[in-house]
Amino acid sequence: MITRLIDRNFANMRLDRYLRKAFPEESLSVFFAVIRKKKIRVNGVIGKANQMLVEGDLVNIYENFKSVPEEEKDMSAAQKATLAANSSTEKPAWTQSVKSGWGKPKTSAEKQSNWGAKELDIVMQTEDYVIVNKPSGLASQPGSGTRPGESLVEYLWEWGRSEGLDFRPTIAHRLDQETSGMLIAALHGDTLRDFTRMIREHEVEKFYFALVKGNLKREKGTIDESLTRTDAAKGSKMKVGEEGKDAQRAITHYRVKQHYEGYDLVKIKLETGRMHQIRAHFASIGHPLLGDSRYGDFALNREVKKNLGLHRLFLHSCRLEFDWKGEKKIFDCPLPKELQAVIDQLKPLRFERER
Image 1 (spheres, rainbow, N blue to C red):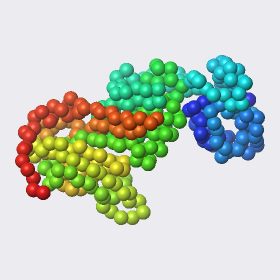
Image 2 (tube, helix red, strand yellow):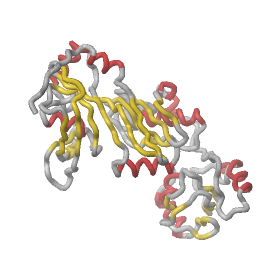
Image 3 (cartoon, one colour):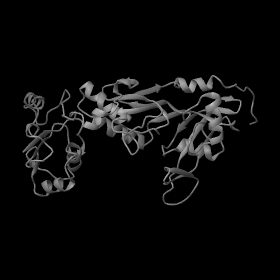
Image 4 (cartoon, rainbow, N blue to C red):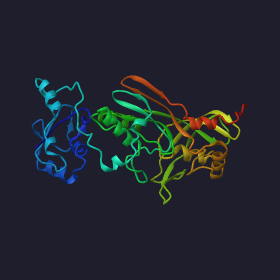
């Protein structure tokens, strides 16, 4: 039998989803079988797939999962102590974190990789989340073309191990590999669900700096054009302005921060967060981002690389704003030094545009 106490990381989660999260190495057929055969009890009552778990629930699984070592089948000593301390109440009210045992030893691939947890640039760390400044060139999460252990998510996992966290830090949104700047990483399961909902409902405001080709006709504006994903051998791209069932509405607001000779530095606010949204939108209006190897002006990219030393995409997540537990949170992150060095070489323009 396997016994588990539900902590805040798994609270407000369906029983079937909890099983998939808590025992990722088991197959779905195993979970369906134990539920169908009534081999799971929650607080002594037969569990149902769609029932919602709450913090403090006691889950007994009358099955021996192959992925769970003998010594991990029972509750941890910390869980037992907490349960005993709260035995006078119907459902314990946890006052401390309970170790979940996620921090298993590194795999051989992880040991061989170049872990970068010590190099993480943490803008802010709280009890519930961290704000991390991702450098350009680092993938947000593992995937094809990324070596094991060399993504921001995996760096966060290693950092979480060193911090003794009871939950794998998980990013709530992503940035393109070439884009630098701030990302939110949740430190608890309930925090991750809150941020996922907030981002889906546009309650997290995200701002970016970009350097674009040419001078925009307006000081501020909005690009409201649909995006449709197309997949190809050279990589996925977004087509702008097409209609159809796969088209997604995308809205980008911008304001010119400074005009330069041949370029504009713009501050961008995303209303939607589609893949490559900023890059595809500005390319569609004739002002592609400098250093963009997918949507940009390739001849210009070669020129600025040679003359200005720009070896990356000029796009940086510079500000995050959201409400958290009744307080307004604002986080700013200045341009990294390699982008500021490009700006310092440009010639500012000062003139009034026609309205």
